[in-house]
Image (tube, rainbow, N blue to C red; front, side, top):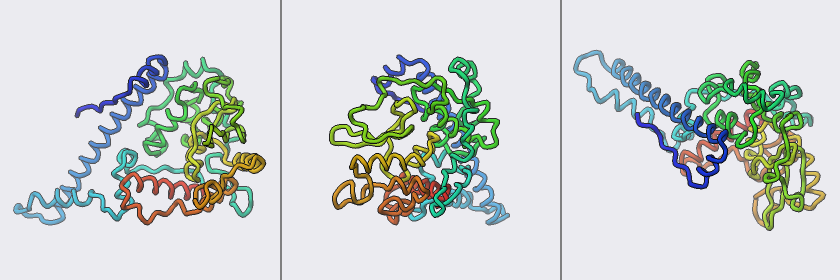
Length: 347
């Protein structure tokens, strides 16, 4: 099988050449993606062959079997139906790699009604420091203990997107400080990896430091918690995830699933949204539905998310899309992620 080609722009290539650690990580990720695609494709081919054989055996036991019947039946059974959201989702890259796997998550605790709701990835996070190395030198010495994509997916049942985000995406050009030996030996490596990431970007990380090129603009900050910042840049207002030293990590979409997925990836506590909302209200910043833009349903109720009512935090139900079949496999995949996210939150 021919290998996949990864074409990088000259600007990205130049940045990689100036950062050997990042370049090595990107090259390793590219190799793992190629291997995963090859393995998954072989599994699909083997599965179609098995279906074809089974189909032929079930239709007749005579030598006059139509040799094309079984293969046609197998092909038909794997062809996505335009009205079937699950079939549409299988056409996406993440589903292609993760078919047959599950992404289990611990149940959320508490409810919006009781006022003590806690995000599932935060359950037991109080001692997450145990998933960090004591120094960057120690982390570098133990780098080989970090699992590759396949190892992590096999150990956790997570899909490709989840695994690649947790292993590489949440680190980027920052220093990897997570103790993967401790994470993989835990009872729940998926949750442990998320909690380790949250600890890595907290004051518990001995290697954390302010990086001038990634710092927030103090003149534009409207609200700030340990891991959230609302910044105004000219006419635009944006929500960022940050580490405890004030370095920007990633921009967050102003939607309930967008906020929750990002905070889950980085192991951050949605309860921080209450404090952010208090500061935004004091500053007169509009962020709720129908308030951001006149006549628009844009916006999200940050407190509703923080208190376990994420499904009711927007002007519409983000777990429903009657027109998803008309939008292609990407939309179906996104809808399925939203539904799974809502279920994991107890919504």
